[in-house]
Length: 323
Image (cartoon, rainbow, N blue to C red):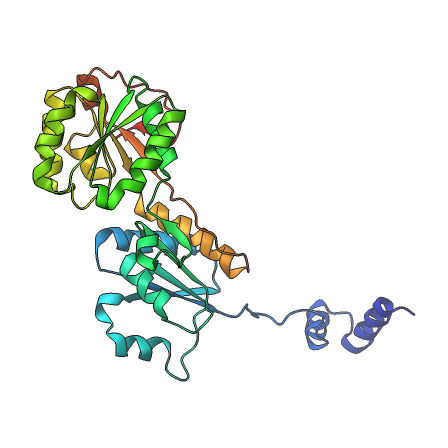
């Protein structure tokens, strides 16, 4: 008698013909899992840099992305409320249950997590971080989803959004973004575009730099650059550009709402959901690799129309007419 027939014979003799009894005996013999037996809880620590809306929306998206995984429990920690001693007590004191994964939201949280929050060797992932190489240092690499859209991708999106643009003015501080300019110039050459450098070393240099080169550009491109960017500067430049019928390209919703003709826009909840998918793969044992962020390109139809750009109603994703 083979094993299967023997087990069937044993169950029928001991348990009898009743289905409930048979199921109970199968559980007793270890042939079925006990009722209510659940997978062990997986604990995930979410460390947030600051209590600001973009980060909170990102956390909301991350947690919603894990909602279908009942065995995963998250706990959110606000870095601003934790001093060094508090971090040790929360994450490293004896008897504390270990977290299976640390998720850093924002650059301050990423730096803190990579400096040693949690046990040695615990998987770590970041998102909502711009220029992560400046956070971790040139010799160290974190793992996660940055806020950096690849330069070549940006150039391609600008070309698709505004096919008539051929000369793209880039306003930047060489001390901060000379590498970005080199990458942009190289990518533009493959797309039939030319990047015109507008180099400034302080905000007071911006009006004169623009005055010299308005005639040399078909559009003006803003990138994250702390020398160049301020709310008042952005409003001033967009107004001056509009008067000269030069479309402005920006990198968030503020630019779009202020009058930029095209803007790269993030949905922070969507980024959180993107990170949640990545976290699930890491928890399943996959290696963590850096991933470009999901993004949208909004065309400001009203502004573009007034500048004579004639927006299309058939842009390929992620380009679309903005709200």
